[in-house]
Length: 318
Image (cartoon, rainbow, N blue to C red; front, side):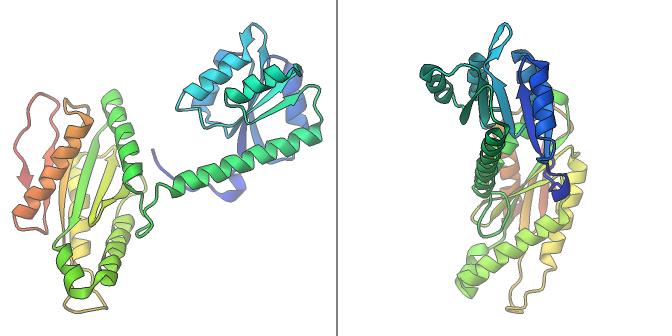
C-alpha cells in the first residue's frame, strides 16, 4: 500500500448512507451537497458491509430498519470487523425508545438521531463526528511515528509487514525486507556524545527517506537499526537500492567533525512470490543477513532470495 498525501482541495470526507428508502438518500445528498462530502449508498446490510470494506468511508449514516435486515445486527458486525470497527456510525431511526438508543450506543454508535430529523441538527452532529474521527486518525498516525527521526516506528512496521507478507502469499507478488544497522554506533556516542549520535540517526533517516521510493516503507526498528519493507520489488532491485543507500551514507560529510565517518551494514531477504517461510522466519533471515554482513567486515550488503520451496539456499555477501 502506498501512503500519499491527498491534495487538500480533493480531500472530501466520505459518507456511506445505509437506508432502504431511496428518498432518504436523495434528501441527504441534496441537503448536504454544499458540505464538501462524497457520498455512496447502500440499501441492504450485505451491500453496506461490502462498501464499508471496499470504499473505506469516514462516516456511516445507518438506518436500523433495513427492510428484512436488522441495522443493529449490521452495526455489531461492523464493530467486530477490524477493517471497519474504527469508522464512526450515526444511527438514524424512527424508534425513540431509550432501550433502543442504549443498545445502539452499547454496540458502538457515536450518535443516535431520530426521524424525522432536522437537517441543521444532523449537519452539526455529522460535522462533529467527522471532526472527532479526524482527530483520532491523527493521533493514531502520530503514535506510529518515531519522534527522533520522523520515520514510521516499530509498531507500524509490525503491523504493515504482516499485511505485506499476506499480500505476497495471496497474490504471488514480489516482496523484499531490509534490515539496516549503523556500524560501531556505540563508538559514535562514546567519542562524540549523544547529541551527535542523535544527529547521525536523523541524517541516516533522511538519506533512507530520500533514496527510497514512495512505495517503500522506511521504519526505525529501534536504537540504531532501521528496516525497509519493499512491496512489489524483486530481490535484485532491492539489492541495487541497498547498495545505493550504503554508498550514500558512507559518502556523507559531517560538519561537526572531520573525524566522524558513518557506514551501515544491510541484510536483505526477498522473494519473487509466495514462500514456505513464515512471516517471522522471513524477518529472522533478513536479520541474520545483517549480522553476517557485520561479521564479514561491515559496510556491506548481504542478500538472500527467499525460496519458494523447502529449505534455504546459501547466502550471498555482495
